[in-house]
Amino acid sequence: MSRDPAKPNVILILADNLGWGELGCYGGGILRGAPTPRIDKFAKDGLLLHNFNVESDCVPTRSALMTGRHPIRTGCLQSVPAGMPQGLTPWEKTLPEVLKEAGYTSAHHGKWHLGDIPGRYPSDRGFDEWYGIPRTTDETQFTSALGYTPDVAELPYVMKGKAGMPSENVCVYDLKERRQIDHKLVECSKDWLRRQADAAAPFFLYHPLVHLHFPTLPHREFEGKTGNGEFADSMAEMDHRVGQLLDHIDDIGIRDNTVVIFASDNGPEFRPPYRGTAGPWTGTYHTAMEGSLRVPFIIRWPGIVPENITSNRIVHVTDIFSTIITIAGGIVPTDRPIDGVDQTNFFKHPETSEPAREGFLFYIKNDLRAVKWRDWKLHYIWEPKVNEGRGKLESPYLFNVIRDPKEETDILAFNTWVLQPISKMRAAFTKSLKNDPAPPDPLKADM
Image (cartoon, rainbow, N blue to C red; front, side):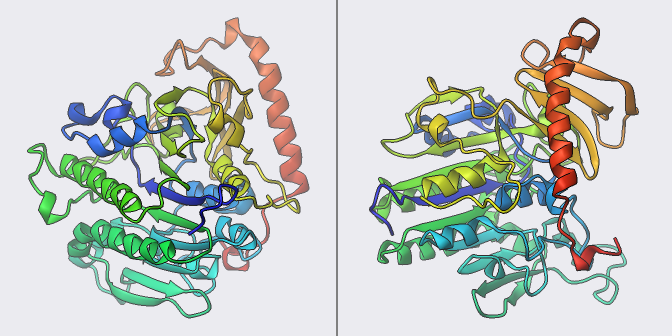
């Protein structure tokens, strides 16, 4: 591990479909049937963001995180079933690949969802080793589903791999394994961190949890723990797993020079009985509502990021790419458009620094759904609930998300001036996209 302050170690823990309103430090916790004391305490050790924004679902967010580029640029537009072409093209440069050039070693333990064939596994894309699932968790239901046979739909597997070697199957990813996987992922990360503590190189650990993705099933040790059902039990387990990682960081003596980030990849699930909450915000993932865009984000960097601070400053998931590279002393790629901006100065001085970002465009697949600028949000397509919308709007809806957090009252007629800065943002991005379209991906040519 590194003890050089100019080369801090970095740990990124990413929850799956954890809504803004689930954790105690975001107004949930006991109100959602599951106290989250470990993450709540972690939030007091650093900076908590109220306005951290992600993409529409798993694949788009994870591609944005790994490349610093909106999915409309990378072609990672949506989650697709097993057996269909998916993942990042080899041309894209990933976060661990850039960090490797800066002298970092890296590991991935958890959900990948950016490629499920040789050449696109984590160990093929910059990580020195990995353990986890190449796609997603609803596949655990396959083997117990009515009519399923492996000859018509691929069996899902937990896998592992090391750089320069083929990745291999570990076991079938079924409902039994679903309950155990977050425990196993923590054990993998603890073992890897223990090895890094004795090494000289700085490290990057990416630990994308499986919780709370559906089916949201807790480890048997947490079953019935809250008395409020399996979703709440799973939240309690997730909090415990994060606590285990934080305790291990302290136990092996790497806390002082290690940046730890906890965030979510998407807003809450919309399908019962696993439906989550975004607190005061309307919507779930797969929509352009604030409940889809805003998710938890907490960063701890001892002695550098001030403790017990919250902020409503806009940060986007693409920014994490650029910021981690800057923190690590690396070089952000200059041979392609990078949408992420460096938020290092903001993280260090959250109460006095100037905004690094004023807004962003939000796409679902190829459709521009909304633009967010300062405290304003302009919707071009209206779909407040998944599969329930009015389609493209002849006159866009405009909301001020401070005064109207649930996006209920269109006030464009009184604030048409907002169209000017938003239209300029849109025009600049459209021009950039036209000049640098998504790179061709031979696997997806016929999709």
